[in-house]
Structures are given as structure tokens and as C-alpha cells.
Image (cartoon, rainbow, N blue to C red; front, side, top):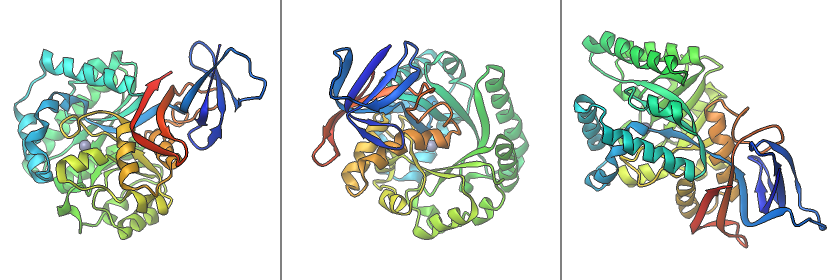
Length: 365
Ligand SMILES: [Zn+2]
């Protein structure tokens, strides 16, 4: 049994000053309380904030080998980025180096305190790694393509990838890429499949070109119970947010600020989403558009650019928000008795202003 305490303990919903968590040897939470005045010396005390493990709601593990090529398309915009990625999918086959770099990315996420990942897959390259990973993955097997003649082939090819995931015992579902990249028949197929799995991830308003498109016809086809992950939201407006709220109670706005900054030197309207009381989660996107797969680093970026967003909100987005996005609040995102959500210590907090310093670090406890 371990008793671990810190200046603050964040449960996923609330901040407890001088909170203490009692865990058994398997990481099961036995109790959460406030540190008593007469503490025994068996309590470990840290000068930081304890939180549940982080959830990365949007990643592309299979693009991990792009890490070193990053400067090539920094700030060049989304169209150029997608063009390069398209070429990759047409000509790349899994090799040992790619596998090793995916493994490295998976290890880094673990060390950064991430416990669960929503991962986009266009191939089955990451599946064998996922069967051995210490992280929980939900694989969003993604469909995209505009050419009507190729629709049937894509449905069959992606269907095989999806079947591979299920045969390995992985959590997986079929999902559309984005509204602008889907033939209408392919979109119909992907939305039907996602409704059956009750979870759908959609790249949304990542680029300026999408600014004036409407999501309403798409929203009308979602089942009431389908969790909707809207990814990026870099160029969403107040009207967009209200249209989504009118159509569904299951939306989560997944923000990947570092990736947006890399690709288009823009950031999503995080403060607007906060003020409107939206459900938000973080994603890192892939190492093709980010230097790290670190949820803490995404929090630091928003904290610097939107100082009005309180630290508690950022922490909630990083934990419970992500668990909600993956329909996994029964396992992750909450530090409460009976759960095993992982335990992370964040050190390097400006406690006077309750802000993350840029030197802040997260590690597993
Ligand atoms: Zn993405």
C-alpha cells in the first residue's frame, strides 16, 4: 500500500489542497482524502499536483517516423501537409525502422504520463505493437477518398484493416477522415459504421478552406448515442459551436494546438470553448506535425496563449475530457476509489498564480 500526497490533488473534476491518495500495489485507488495535521512518516509528499493519467484523444502512431522531417513543412498550411501525407500512404510499407520509431513514440507517451490514446489508423502497421503496449489504444480505422470509382475498394481495404484490429483483440472502430475528403457514398458507409460503434472521430476545420462549410447535414445523420470527436477546430466560430450543441450532447472538441501551430501557425479558439462550457480534450496529433507526443506540452501552449483558462479546466481536459472522448470514463480520467486511472505528478507549478511554468514536468508515480 502507498500513501502519496502533494500540494494539490486533482481528481479529474476537482482540486483538493494537500490531497492524499492511497493506492494498493496494483495502482487501484483505495482512498482520496485531505492530509491530516498528524501525518505519519509513511506518506510520500510531493511539491506538485497529482492527477489521473493523461488521455491523448488524437494521435497517428503510424506517422511516427516523420519526426525528423518536420521542419520541411512548418507553417506551409494544411493543403501542402495533406499532399505530402497522401504520397506517403501510396508508397510506404512497414519496415523495421518504422516499427522501432512507433515503439519509441509509444514509450515516450507512457513516460509522459499518458494512459490512453485515440489513434487514427490508415493501415494495420501499429497493431502488433498495440497488443503489447502498456497504454490503452482505441484505433480509429479511417476512411478517406473522393473518387467514386475507388469507393468499393476503399470499403473492402479498410474493412480488412478493421477486421485485423478486432482479430487481435484491439478496441477499434471505422471512422471518416474529414468532410472535404470523402466521396458521399464513402461518407455514408463510414457514418453508418461509426454509429454502430457509437463513436466517430472527424478532422474538423483544421484548415482555413473549411471555414465556411456547414456541419449540420452531417450532424443530422449521427445517432443520438454516438460520441463525436471533433478534431482540431482551429477555425471554428461561435455559430459552429452552437450548431453542434443544437444537434448533439455527445460532442467533444479535441484540441491539438501544437500541431495547428506547426502546420498553419494558428491556434483553436480554446478560450471561447471554455467560456461556452464545452467538453474539451487534448490530442497531440502525430510526430509529422509535433515535436513531442506530450499532453502536458499541449496544456503549456494553451496556458501561455489563453491565460484566462484556469489550470483546473486544462487538467480536466487532459484527463476526464479525454476519457469521455474515448467513452472510457469507467477506466480513465478519474482519481476515485475503485479505479486504476494511473497517477501522474506535475512539478514546476507557479502556485501563487496557479499556472504552468514552461519548465513544468510530468512523470508517473
Ligand atoms: Zn489527425
